[in-house]
Image 1 (cartoon, rainbow, N blue to C red):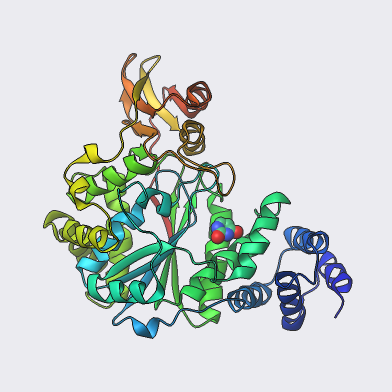
Image 2: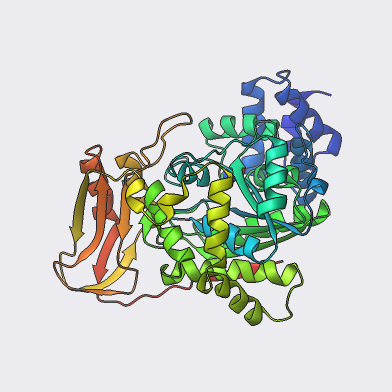
Length: 432
Ligand code: URA
């Protein structure tokens, strides 16, 4: 097979065979195809796209370059939830304990934050002592005994995707729907749960900036899952403004604990209960979505999800005292309010700018391998559509003195106060 011919075929918009796609994936992973030819291939896909069959083949070939987990070692119904990435998205920390409290096994491999988006693993590492690396046996044992485990993604899961993603990142070929879908699904299929629920974020703080594009991505991922014999559903959710109030690692863990105690912000609680309700429906526990929603919410009200969170933190070596004593999370040195400059409605609390503002303080990474400061971040006290008066505190910056000027530049861009009261829905669409 000839890589130049394969690139040329894709440049003409022709459909590649399974063998051709397999050749590209294996050749690049093994170092036979150099970066410059792979870049040309990715660029051709970026401009010409892929059919669903091509994207499915790419997904499966990438999955098969590494280990596929043997989830028969976990008893019961196993669900994985994946978010395509956003700002203030801490749903895993709440949803995992909620599901486990209801007897649904939640086994998850998560990533670290990159760019303006946060990562679950960085958040969990702000809990003193928490171990994000478990051996495979420890992982299965914990899921069986506690009902949930969240660990850092093993390098052995879809290594082809890891290499290709790194190349896409530096060749401006990330924003391609078939490439994003196959990248995400290769890892999800390697993790091999019974069911996958995809939270596809839409809006300024997400990869997908509008519903049309997000829906295309969601439908393709659901279709790839179906072709691979898995049950996959996608929920399109709003990421124009941050989810909940807190953005930044320790702050988000504290907000998750408050939500588990029944004191969470309305949007965050509603999203967790909604996703959990679909899990309950699919685990065939109840007949109506409303009943499932109430069941999910019940775990926050009766303390069972909080109890599961404690078990989970203890099992992964974390200090459970911090659950009732937030001062055990390393606090940031400075708290600086950001106040409203005039009376009016909050028309925009831009998720991307808030994510960049938190990143400037050191909450996120600019490139893989950078350290993060777990204590810094932003707490947004008001939501889009809220009325504010001049001098009201809209948000607070928690900083250690790094990047404050840049942070406030982003915050000035993030906030628009106007005359219109705009309200947006949190859940935009459900795709099965
Ligand atoms: N997340 C992934 O894992 N891959 C992509 O391509 C984009 C987001």
